[in-house]
Each structure stands twice: as structure tokens, then as C-alpha cells.
Length: 398
Ligand code: FES
Ligand SMILES: [Fe+2]
Image 1 (cartoon, rainbow, N blue to C red):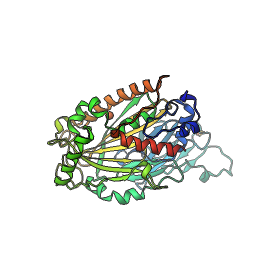
Image 2: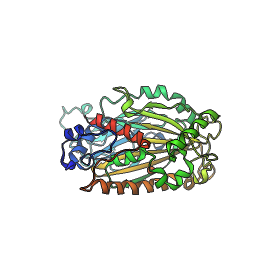
Image 3: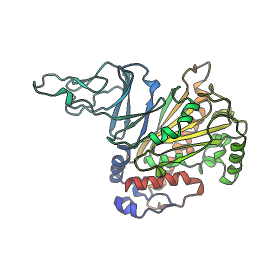
């Protein structure tokens, strides 16, 4: 059975154009390799600077068995440290979020400042070197106010992306947004089934009635292509339409993969909301509703859909080999006022109902993939982004 095959056997029998073999989803040994090769190396969205506006503010970013403290230090910088005490390893910070001047371990009370420096350790020998026992740092990569984390000492570079997408950051005002809602949806399935599902819109028309009324991407390619062509010719909105294909497998060695694209919504649809109505003030420097939405992704598990008046982020994180969580983040302009400029229920409606549909189809997918009778199936042309992900994944695991 494929579930018992070794990683090298599974990699050798990978058949491009088909879904993965069962072992990739079910084998806990393969999951351990994924953690090492993917999750301890690549960039993942941890959160947003608007969650930690003041010195000493912090929140925890957690996946699998890892816990990372994200904080703002006295100089106003964003810092990240592993939540693992340098004494005997206890979690140091037990609160999910808060404000503090120092992190004191609940076990024997070693205390660390906001920069992870050990500042107090009770009853230790005189020659104990406090400066060598700070919390392990994690790498922080800021994209405007978005906080990305890598646990690698040598993470993939973000420079190619920063250079390429500078105009996009500026047009959407990436450094002038705030996070107004984050919801975690637990999904009883291997994390790859969630990522694969996010990357293809082959399922959009049958599975997402509301999304498919707004997003032209739900159409078959033959119908979508002329709409996109007309959109590219006619749009007067000042948001970049040129796509970037530096996605996963296409990234140069040493760089993180990313992707940017802009696609039309159906005529009259201004935003991702009930009836396509505007739901918040225009972002950044956008001059008008373009009846379009931009897709932006960075690294293997973080995706954004940017409407002209708000941005939705999705992050898929493993919690074990057969479970994961889908986190959805909603962002608006930093100066937008709840109740006046936007209403949370209107703002979050579309992607709340859409992710509930997704949760169900991903779990149903997992049930079939678990079967003795599952075998890899042929992908459609509408699953080309998923194909990119699978190719990248196989390469990352090799
Ligand atoms: S484990 Fe943290 S002080 Fe002992
Ligand atoms: Fe979906």
C-alpha cells in the first residue's frame, strides 16, 4: 500500500499531472520530513503589526509542536523568539496575547526581555553566562505591516519579491492596513489537501455558489479568457495588472516563491461581498473600484485575495499529520472606523461562508484519500496552480 511506502519510493513514483499518492497524506514519517524541509525553512504569515501597536505587546504564532513569541520591543521593532526556555525547555509564555515588560518562565522563573535576552536566572553559579542563554530568535520578514516568520538560520530571500512588487505594496497601501478579524477553522485533513484546494478554482463553480456569482475565475478557461482580455484592455483602475510568475517551483534557488495576479470580477461587482457591494474605504492609493481582485501569495502556505477595499489572508498550518487549521484574516485601511466605514459582518461574510464550504469538501476529500481504494487521479487544466504546488513540493522533499 502507498501509505507504507518510504519517502524515496513515493518521490520516485510521483506522476506529474496526477494527484499525490496516499502515503504523502497518511504517513506520519513523511509529515516529520515535511516539518523539517518545509515548515522549519520557508516563510509563513504570523500576523500583522496592528496586533502589537505598543512596546511589550505580544502574541503567539503556533503550528505543529512549535510556539513562537512575536513581540514589539522598546525600539518599536518586531521581534520573534522560540517559546522554549533555555533552562530546561518549558514554554515561557503561556498567554496567547498580551502586553509585558519581560517574559518570565513559569517553571523556575528565568526571565527574558523583549529582545529575548536572559535578564534574570535565580540561584545559578557565579560563572553562569546569562548572555549565552537568550531565547532562540526566529527570522522576521515584514511585507508592509504583514509579519512573516522563518525558523531557518538561512531563510529564502524575499528581495526579488520586494523589488518586483514595490508598486503593488504602494498601490494597495500594504503599510497602511489593520487586521480587524482573524478566525481559525480546524480542518481534519492533512495540510496539503487544504493548500491544494485553495489553489484550484476547478471546484469553485460546483462548491461555492456565492463566490461564483462574484468571481469570473470560477468560469471554465474558455469563457474566462475573453473576459480577462477585455478587462486588461479596458481597466482604468491604477492597480497593476501585470502578473508575476515567481511562484514556488519557478523561484530561483535561494529565493522564496511568490505570485501576483489580477483578475476581473463579474461586471458591476466591486468587492468580495454580498451583491459585490463596496464594504470599506478604498485601500492605499487606488483611484476607483476596478471590478477586479488581485491574488498575492508568499511561500507555500500563505495566500491573499486583495479586493479594492479590503484584503483577505489565508494561512494553512499543520497541527499533526492528519489535521490542520485554516486561518482567515481580514484587513482594511488603517484609518477605517468600525460601524462607520465598515461593518464586520458584511466584510467577513463571503469568505466565512466560502471557507465553511471548503472545510467540508477538504474533509470529504480526506475521507476518500484515506480509503484502501484511493489512487492518484488525473488533474484538470483548471488545476494548473495546484500542479505548480505539487511540483514544488516534490522538489522541496527531494
Ligand atoms: S524551564 Fe524555564 S526556568 Fe526552568
Ligand atoms: Fe474553495
